[in-house]
Image 1 (cartoon, rainbow, N blue to C red):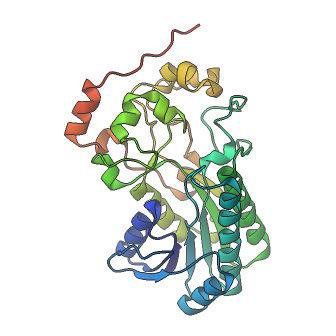
Image 2 (image 1 turned 120 degrees about the vertical axis):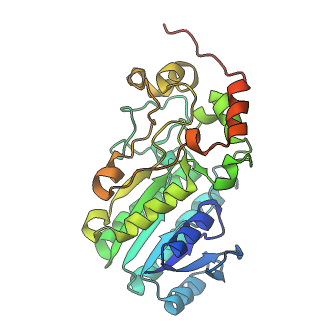
Length: 309
């Protein structure tokens, strides 16, 4: 399949473009700067420019578009800039894809659309799944919620299949070896201090697993994926101890339902992806950390949970 990947030089884009190429897809990468990826047809482009995007789609004629481009970190730019940039790029890419008859369009959303992080937020149920109410509280999350609605609108009005996925906290291969994550901490530091991972409710996903989800989505029957959204995350939580031991101190918004999470299970459920697509993450921190990092984690002091009431 001929696939256009927007944001191909980014954290998830690099891994996705390389994985799709290795799987036999003919991949075109589109980003503001070239990523230097081997075997990839890279195009430097301003995706906010409608004429440039239209020209790219007319020239490349992809069968599928994987839309990963945009400002990818909350509060990393002024709120208005994040909202306008992410939503404008998505609408421009979707419109051009529909106009040129692209068969598949998959867009990256985010778990942050649920609105967790504010003091007043409470989980409707645990684990969190795609039926949970959406309540964005900042421009990044709002932009992703708008992108989800754009997907649904184009699914109703345009030919082809449009869908979205909510990738959890992306961990690239080099970060398992000790490179800083997008928040500046290493994985070992996030595991040793539950407060760091609690900000994202202990969610994460290996970038290669997310890329495998994208490959699976592209091959699925269109009637299964059209208009649908999926959480994409690791099968376990980014935590040394069970969520049942941690939630009262570090994530009280999860509520007493989290007491049932006594094993390594994740706060975000990927049961829908497994049920409809047969996808399940194959990598986790327990098998991806190198031995020396595991040893450092075992030796590091960890914050003890508050006593149960």
